[in-house]
Each structure stands twice: as C-alpha cells, then as structure tokens.
Length: 219
Ligand code: DX5
Ligand code: ZN
Picture 1: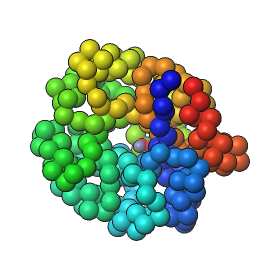
Picture 2: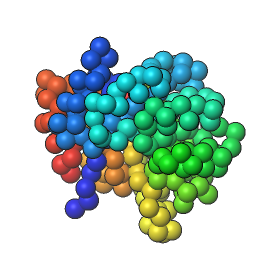
Picture 3: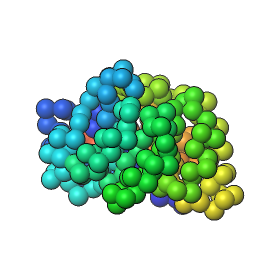
C-alpha cells in the first residue's frame, strides 16, 4: 500500500504560539509543515513572511513545505529559501518565466513545486513536469482555510497521475483545500501522495493532532 504523507497547514494553528504548535505537529506524526504565504494581492488574504519562517525553523527538523501565493513571486524566492524553506511551491500565473523560477529554486538547493488553481489546466505546466518535484493541486480557491473541497479537481488528479505513469516521471502530487476524513480518501484514490490539511488536523476530535493525522493516513 502507498504511504501517504501529511503536511498540516499552520494557517489553522494558534498564531500566538506557532513554535509550540509546530513542535506538537512533529510529535503527532506530521511528515512536513505546510506554510501558506499570502500577499493580499495574488490572494485576498495576508499571512506570514520570511522572518516568521526563520524564527520557526528551530522548532522542528521536519521539512518546511512553503506554498507561495504571492505575485510577483520570483524576486522573493531567495528570501524564503534563506528563511528555511525546503520545498518552495509557486503558482505559474505569478511569474513571467516558469523555467527561470524553477531553475532559481533548484540553484538554491530546494525542492520545486508548482501549484494549480482549480481553474488552471495541467497543460499550463505540462512541459515542466520532468523538471519539478511536486504538483500542488488546489481543491479550493486559495486564500482561506476551512473551505469546501471542489470535487471537479479529482479528474485533474487522475489525469496528472496518468501522465506521471505514462512518462515515468517522479513528481509527487499534493492536494490542498477542504481535506477531511472523506475527501482524503477520494484524493488518494485518484493519485495523491501528500495531503495538506489545516482545519481537519487542528479542529477535529477536539484538536487531537495525533488522532487526526493517523486517520488521514488511513486509506
Ligand atoms: C488555502 C491554503 C490551504 C488551506 C487548507 O489558500 O493554501 O493550505 O489553509 O486549509 P483547510 O484544510 O482548512 O482547507
Ligand atoms: Zn497551501
């Protein structure tokens, strides 16, 4: 059976004690930490920048899975890399040159992810699939936690999984938005390897992180 990885989104953590919550996630079986970076322009919400990520780095050895929802993205890549990001994911709409942004992230020794909004088709990035480590499928319109899973994206996951198999590529498929104990199964069955979850991990079962992560991993 395929091993599912969980990347809890700290968007649903207690922002007054992010360090403590990240430590708790590590102790509860999280595989990485999903950090949602929003600029109030590419998406209608503002979150955290490099200094916060830098200050959180000492609380865990888990990889920081940094999801950049900022435009323009290219000029900020180095700052997020220096702050301690391990995986840097950007949206193709936020750069003038997808290949240059991929190469910049690689030159900094980081893993590269590209995120597809619900309305963005695979063909936007198809020629880059062999150059990247991860495709982050958005199953909500980015900007806020706690939204409902858009089930139309399941076909996109299946199509991407098929391309991966046909072309013998190695990128991971990650999904972000509206993941609960039911939609997690739908996503994994369609080909997802990594589940991002904010609300479900932090709020279900009275905030029992370990229990929630364990249930999400059960397919
Ligand atoms: C949305 C963010 C997601 C979101 C997931 O823009 O990218 O990471 O916080 O949150 P839930 O799991 O609450 O849908
Ligand atoms: Zn995200």
